[in-house]
Length: 165
Image (tube, rainbow, N blue to C red; front, side, top):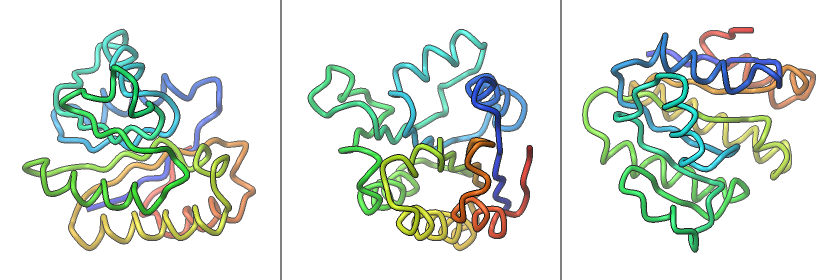
């Protein structure tokens, strides 16, 4: 199993996400941790880009629980990207409920840095990538090129199996 850190320019970000799903994750069960956009927005983006989203389970850290979108069957809505413990628990639950081989997709470390201290994001990324390796799950982590000089992303590059720029 492998973990890939994708480093992307901001203006190409969502096109790259769609491309990864079309080219690398087609037909795979994906647990998508979204800290950028609500799962309904991502579903619309995927539909517009011709991505089959039927095998994607979202852990949505953006939609508020009071939203009408909070009760989607393929989506677990959390309190926000600041509560990394809650995200970790949600990932563990999703890994038990999603059957077959799975890939964890984190969108994105850069957004998590906006909401959390870099030491928290560093520990979370270490936890997440370690968990993926421990249970034999592939992983994809997104980050912006503008954040690559930050220590936490330098660290993420060292623990990822592969870095794609």
